[in-house]
Amino acid sequence: MRLPLLLALALPPLLSLNAAAQDDDTLFGAGVRTRPKFDGSADRTVDFIPVVRYYGRPWFARTTQGMLEGGARWSLGPGLDTGVQLAYEQGPRDHDPDASIGVHLEADRMIGPAPVNGLLRLRRHLDTDRGTQLDARGTVGVYGGHGVAAGLFVQATWASEKSFEAYYGVHESGLLFASLGALASYDLSHRWLLVGSIESRRLSDEAAKSPIVERRSGVYANAGIAYRF
Image (cartoon, rainbow, N blue to C red):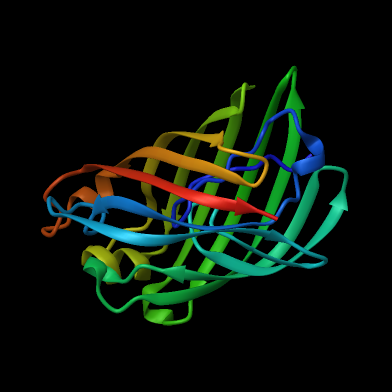
């Protein structure tokens, strides 16, 4: 069972947690996100963002694991997939956006009645001066009923020295940030659903040393609407 996760570049299409038949539904939509201009900034900005969830054989595209990405995936066994991806990357201080290529390993399990998803994702920027990052992300469904689905997620991201230098101007490597969030969806009809999420992200001690960091913690929030095919 593939847990319909969230957070897209940030938008989450969290589908009915008890509807396995809908696990591979294709979703397209749009939403609005409010966020810090960059992690560590005291200024905020608002973006229009896509909501995408498509799983083919083997191709996929999604905004449901923290970023806009697409590529190919292969099953290693029940509830275990691996793949390669090309992803959109925000540029340093929100300038000069970039892309990354990488690989990921993803697992879906049930712990009692709760669906759980785990993701490991390695990303290397096409601009090699921006280095490499590794994401570890976990999501658990906590409620599903009456057209509502809700979950919680945590993520930690580690970065190479090149990445720290490009984004924060410090000669460090290791943990970049950790985050905790909640996500939910509501079925307006058989085809349409509302999606939303909120995430609190905190920079590591190493990143907080940067002179450009004004606030160590920041909040991301998203809301949107998607059509289920």
